Image (cartoon, rainbow, N blue to C red; front, side):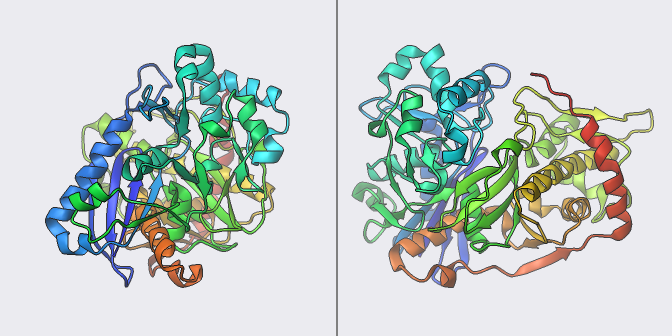
Length: 481
């Protein structure tokens, strides 16, 4: 038995997976995000622990025998968050999250201070990454910066609580701007540029490697026969890739979670930081992931549901399973700023083309199409790095919508596939990493591709209609910085 724990932005999801790679039980607990000022997004690390423990307590109550047999645990998590601990391991402040835009000025300072940043990390300095957040802390909360003993990403803090050790995997670490992506090791020059050193960083491991073990008292709490091994794990998107077997070049996939991304595993670094393509180490050794990222994806649908005061399923149901034509309304999905290709934390969303005849369904369709158009921007940025997308699998909560996947197939003009259980892809991928850390099996034997349950093929007429709309949609963007 193996556990996968995904520390997401909106929830912690935990899955219990058997030796046949079947999910036999899952539990989820919600997380709250605070926004003390516009563009600020923070979470209290204590709630991550409470939510994780609640999922495990629930699994013990419902599947105690199976939980007792767990041998390996894998962790995945939201990337980039700055969790600052003092010398005793106590959080100094709420974690600044991946979608926080406060450190735009610090990004410019960092690139001036360390001109090799893009060449070494494969990324452009953006407010979402971790390093600029530390420069912001040094400027605006100097007493906290002076007290920092350890800087952890969210799932590394969870691992610290579970095991007592500060350890991070290279995929999550590569979203910090402190990692030399080619060497898969901390860059001393990067750390020095933010006033830090290796002493402030956790130990690094590969995602499928054994990292540590669960505390014995926690193993007893959950009735486990012996403390399970905890793997290195992965950031949420690399873990999602492991969950769907995207471990080789040519296996692109779309993540439709709170945020969104179009991702392509590679066996070489194909960086394009000028077009805001992200370079991450994969959770698999000697592999990388190139990604175009958008800050709001399924969260746009959640926003629309709040706006209309109904459940998301009620918004989607009248749309049917496939679009008949593009919506006459256009939507920019920049509710929390944007990354690829604009790197603009200040930009905000827009509805354009409203009229007296606009109804709820027209707006909802426009929201889904706006996210798809943003992913088309990601596709084109990846193409500029030499990565062509021929087809794409979809994971994340948004993959439950057949209408949305049909829109994506037509906007991107590629076949789009979905899986059963695709919304738990990161947690399932984490469980696979937990298994690999215990068994040392061949990676390809474990990280197989799950069965696709449906494929959405592009419709030629709709492909042309969306292609005609895309340039006008792009013209709606106006930088605010």
